[in-house]
Amino acid sequence: MTGPTPKPTARLEARLARVLVVGVIAAAAVALLGAGLYLTRHAGDRVSLTDFVPASPRNPGDILRGVLVLDPLAVIQLAVLILIATPVLRVVAALIVFAAQRDRLYTAISLVVLGGLALGLAGVII
Image (cartoon, rainbow, N blue to C red):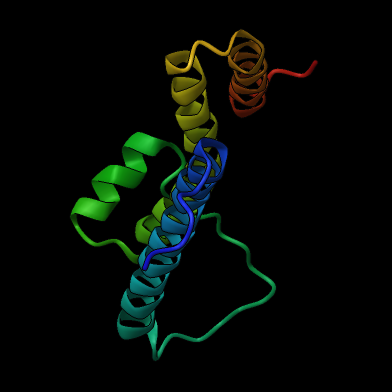
């Protein structure tokens, strides 16, 4: 005997929550890989707390090129990008679901949220 069939909104919430869980787990796994690479390559380095040198990859293209050659800092920055992209992907997934359900109100709300995220990620001050 199986339990009651979940309501469509409960299934939707579970699927959208899964997007967040998968994104966070992926980001953590990539960050751990980057940390491991960093520690294996820089275990004997002396640390200077007086000299700050910013990480070399500064944009997504540089990060991806660095990941291809397993640059530890680029791998760690990729984890940060995945973590930033996770809630954006959740909003996109919600937008698609609401549009497919022809729910105009929530589709519009999702579009507004997505627009706000896009402006924020682009550095536009509102």
